[in-house]
Image (cartoon, rainbow, N blue to C red):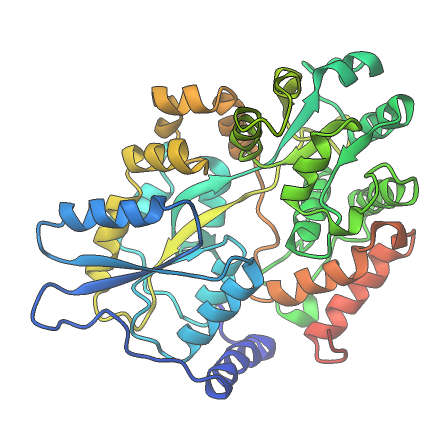
Length: 436
């Protein structure tokens, strides 16, 4: 892990300062109080699946430990803030943590994560793990977290609109083709135009699909970072974003469209194509069963791989999901990793996929009959996760993502100079010459 750069030291010091300003309780549920050790799992909110897995793996430990759960805030930035503050303050309750992939380098770089044991390193890089999750679990060439579930976006579409537009959805499609089809059919394309993390997700996926990276050398010192925002793929991504925004192709209220609003709009009369996560399928089914959406909308739903930025290059869908890490100050890292080994079995991942709608990082889990029944597009999700690319893996991810969100929203404000201006701004922020 790289700790020598001036910016790296400032980041760790900044996190420690946050902990001093906002002190947290450092003693959690890890302590042995007469019974087996209690491990705390800080998890991202879900539909109860992680609580069930904690019960299962507590029972499977045969009395060696009990896993208790504590929900993190719902939005990603607040999750990051709480985890960073606690870890910087040496919180001993950080036994198991659910980590969004972009958090991993930032927390691993200053040594906030306990070393991953050899057996789980082998598991994290095995042939059973989808390629995107393998990449997301590593920093600076080392496995620093364990893949739990993975996530990615598909291109969901209305079959009737695709037919009207004359698009063959059995073949790869590009963003330019979708834009032309929306103009032709006078429909709205579903993208996340809200100022938030989804802006970075979208931009990164377009640039990666174009064969470039937002940060080309993520382990370099800030003085030598090479950003790909203004390269050909980055300029193309900015052009796509700008066109959708300025021509109103995303529909009214694009500045409020997160993943849920995108789905709601897609279900309407102007719905056509939508980039979104697999949750949209069970969500739509539930709405149909509840009588709020006509069944014809579900029958008209199709799915395909994420759009291409360049017609000659395969798309690189976005990587999401959760990695599991152990805090460096946990008094029971061996037991915590034992619990993680249980949580991440293919059987438990399949259960979590089928019941909570979050795809597995284990390829075996996709073969579970219940998963296939709940998600008929499971093979496409697995294929997409093998091709998925993470957002920039860097200890400075918060600064990079925040700058992108500020400069690439609203969509109609993006122009030919946005990419270069954003790259320059990011470098000045990281070098201490500008503030977010």
